[in-house]
Length: 285
Image 1 (tube, rainbow, N blue to C red):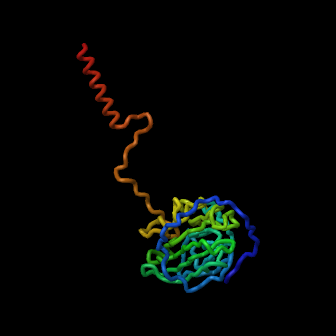
Image 2: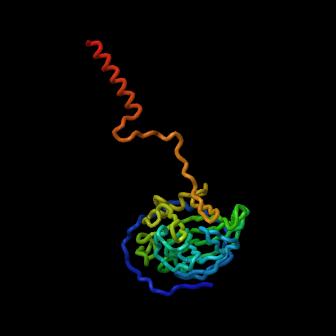
Image 3: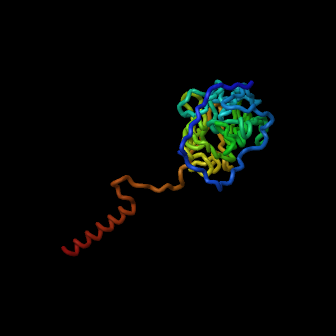
């Protein structure tokens, strides 16, 4: 079932606030093919409700067999979400997975597609926001990103992985979120997830103008997480918990002495100096 919340978005003429992405950046190839058997109706701020992945998803202790696919770059497990200006995923009561939470407008450019498929021989479900525009009816520039849910019940009931895949990110904001006509500036996109209470995550660069764009300091197409494929961010969910990969300390990290305490080299020179001073005094005596 498709639903949309009817309301007015005020458009403004806004000066450029963000950073311009480099035009020479080559697109990544992280988006997986397929997952396109169904096309969502073109809309602004709408949702497709009761979407099923074909397998159960234990997300932070609650097992879900369906979710809402929201046009604005996210899925929610509690209720559909029509909010178009991205809110802080680290301070929300919504149960959400957001590959790119921003004001997508599919009335122009390309629609959202979704469907079943497989990843490494395992059942999967994917949602494609490929070549999508932004509010208000902007067909250019476009973004291409994807959410893939992968069944990992082979490791335990309702276990799963999910991926954020990015091939191109040229806009970050809709015009009603204080962005300009090129989709830049204002309240920029957020990428991450939340269980609606105390456990949440946002990728570095979220809500920072220009950071996630092609060529930006945290460009989504030029980085990765738990994957060797640039533009792919993979998360593992086991027993309802998103497993955070361990931080590997550097090998033989350098020892930096506290302020005011001499390091080994300085201490050695000091001792040599004291020895020479003692011999000099002995000769004088």
